Amino acid sequence: MDLGAGTRGSSGGPAAIRRTDLASRLGALGLAVEDRGDVPVPSRPSKPGSSGFKYAEEIRKVCRETAAQTYRAAREGALPVVLGGDHSLAMGSAAGVAKYHREGKKPIGILWIDAHGDMNTPKTSPSGNIHGMPLAHLVGLGDKRLNRLAGFVPAIDPSRACLIGIRDLDEGEKGNMRQAGVRVFTMSEIDRHGMARVAAEALERAGAGAAGVHVSFDIDAADPSIAEGTGTKQRGGLTYREAHLLMEIICESKRMVSLDMVEVNPLEDTHNATAVLASELIQSALGKRIY
Image (cartoon, rainbow, N blue to C red; front, side, top):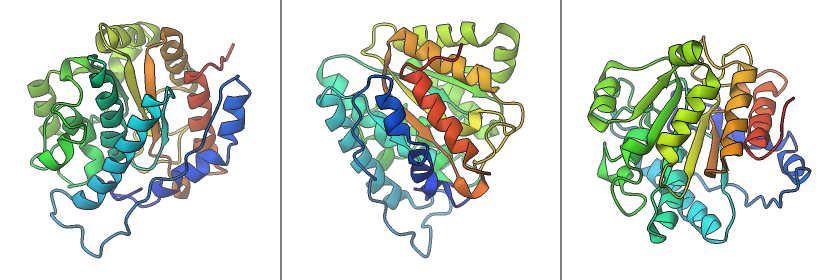
């Protein structure tokens, strides 16, 4: 899906990641892997609807089905890995997992790894692109058509939401962040304190007393020098080693209950290199180590 993005092309992300032989590489780690195929995405309408909330109904349909599929996978004892596609899909993937664990009387936390905050609402968004709004809706802000996908509001308590790698925020979403009370680890904080310390603090805040954490990784969190194939590049991001260390620490914590890897755009890529990075990071989150 690329309905939520301002740049076309991330709809090809899942296929690009699959071309890296992700399933067989995860199998080599001793994991049982089932590829359940693509979630259907409606055709792009000729008009986007509200200028402040583009393609909202179409995105809602995709997110509802994504939520149903991650709920089903979690209920079956699997760990859902969702490939994207623009980041708006996380409203569905995280909602489904949150619904499952709520039935067990446990909340989940979320690690939002991204160059951007994705904390806009239709009222604060300068573009109306919904991929800049998913975290706001997951923590209960925004429009009721999208913040109730889990069946309850908020899907994730904002005190359990940690953003990592942030370096580009709109003014309006800064206010939304303060209102919600999410924890933001900027690139400056990573520079000053190191990834290991930031990862440990984020996991403790998001995961303490919870069933686990949903990890939502936007590939633009990585620096464009290693992740060219994405639509919203922002210099000064995670290095190759920092990104892998973060995923390895998440794996070691045993707190991850679900994972998104999103915003891979093959139209912006060279030799599928960004999809290869995305595949490698998924592998690191699930047990592979770089020594």
